Amino acid sequence: MPLIQNADLNNRIVLVRFDHNVVKNGEIRDPYRIDRTIRTLFYIVERGGRPIMMTHVGRPRSKETGKILLRPEEAVEPIARYIEQKLHMKIHIPSFPFEPEKGIAGIDTSINLAIRKLRERKIGGIYLPNTRWFQGEEGQGKIRANFALQLAGLADIYINDAFGSWQAHVSTYDITRHLPSFAGFLMQQEIMNLSRALNPERPFLAVVAGAKYDTKIRPLYAIYEKVDRLILGGVIYNAFLCAKYDVRIKGVSDNDVKLAKELVAKDRLDNKIVELPYIVESDRLEGRIEGGYRTISTRDFSPGKAYNYILDIDPKSFEDEQVKNAIGTAKTIFVNAVMGYTPHFTAGSQALDHTIDRNSTAMKMYGGGDTLQEFKSLCPGLYLSVMDNANYYFFTGGGTVLTAIEQGSPYGLKPVQALMGKGSA
Image (tube, rainbow, N blue to C red; front, side, top):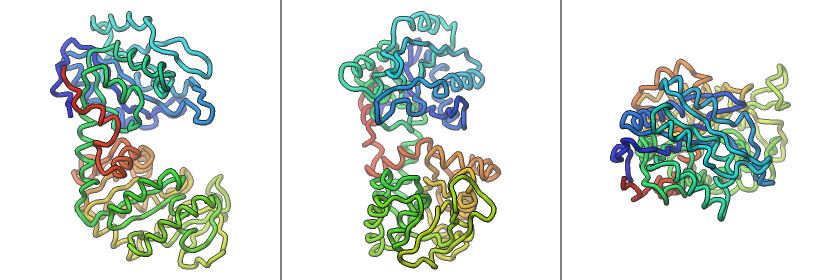
């Protein structure tokens, strides 16, 4: 793989793709993903390169209608301002004409003045608008090809440091056909640490949760094949319980239960799934209302019985001997899970993180923005204490990790494939 440290950056315009998808409702939710890329950005500038940055934010394009909405709360301005403060550099954000519900047609010549100022070092960098605001980013045919050429026309070199953006879009994939392309430092570090999940020291325990069962099926089965023990949470766990005990849980679809039956049948043979026996049933989703929720045990389940929403794992589950043993004896632990329905039900996630931390010898890897955000907000003291702990690693993209595990290699990821053999600057 061509690496940034082998690229000649001096006096070059460097187009760099980050995964700075950290803005929610117009504010930076957590700057962790930005902070992890500062090393790459600093290196570009220190080696004489002039950066043009880009990222996607949110999902502006509707899957149902294909319309692209340019919502102010999905703009890159907060990201650019944060980097300005972090590196004391002036960043220009260009604007381009757009059509309502169709997005930005492309990059026009109005950006040339800003690029000239960038070359003359009158500004420190350029940050392009949200890449998913451009029609070509996720488009097809001529509009996609044109957008790739427009991006390539801005720069001399391309750097991909967007580990969390594993989809083959123009700004992560097509662009490499037109520019010498290299992996940034974060991309390199994430790929190296992926090997610990793909070739783990055993016993290997994974903790996986999700709001929808059907979206996690393929990576879930891939993880199941790789692990020694598996703990489930969220709707994934609820679907599993419904399928195993022939009960109904509000909010779990019949389709999810049907899909989970295959996992139940598989686990009867392999016995890898560690059940969390104490769960929290709530009468409603709206909040944690006194008298409206209670702890129940899976050991009391009987076929045909119906339950209200299961919104959390009771911390008592992590005192269960089977659960404690699975976590305490693991040598590698991968977590892509928020155990409760946030923000009202958080005790399960707190208990999980503290129980995992008590295993002082295991390699502990956390993947996913939501997983990391909950870890930081629910266990701030623990988070600060383990930031420099060699036995912890926090990936910037949980979906990317799951996809790589599913494929059995990080080199099956399309943006990584696109980089291979492309460095020649």
